[in-house]
Figure 1: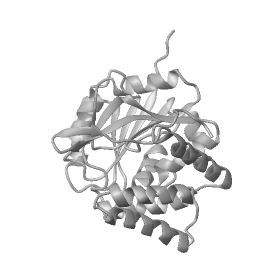
Figure 2: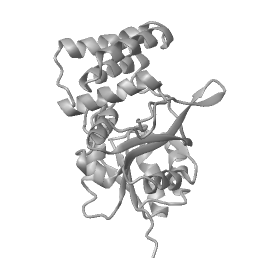
Figure 3: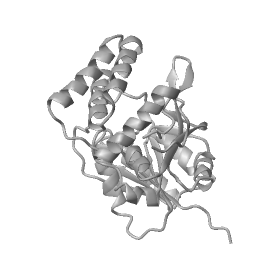
Figure 4: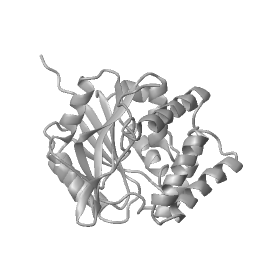
Length: 295
């Protein structure tokens, strides 16, 4: 007898009342619903809790969980602390995939059905997502990502892969480190352009574009990236980043602040080599380097 794929969704949220109704509508419309959608509220002060609790009254697989977070939420680490808080409550729940899903997204009713089908076609696929669209003027445009990258806002991870990489690290750059570790252990990671979702809050608005650029520079250093690749990336950001020049300078500042401050690397030597090989492929083939290419 056919056994349907079982997946669990954990959404760490804080003050998402503005966009959360669209995420709720997307989730409850799924043709393949999850075993559990656990929304971990990181001490919201708006209507987030009420929205989820009302949804849970209609759908028994929707659960609300309060995480006593900080007043100032640190982008990148606090959301994973909240995610882990929720993950630890799953106990012996039976599932095949774990999903980290943000509360500011909109997607089609077949989103998870189509995405999970990609895993059934590739037993080595450990981490995947669709491609997210952001509003640019009067239109929605897809955001380009390296072929091996899965969007952190909607990331599906095979349970075995999740266990082997030790879950997500509660550090900025978690959504790069997970892929590096997975690739180093022989898993594939990817995104699929034909499966799209809408990111309702533009990236960087939570902490500001310049702070985000500084963070990206720091993450690149701590992930063990190639200095040559960073040089090329910096030139690109200086010329094409927004604000012009300042965005690139901010990223360079973040990198050298981490370098001179001797910030601890988030990867071991094998993982650092894996990441550099992935970056070398990008230099040879561009951002659309061969998908599913393991180091």
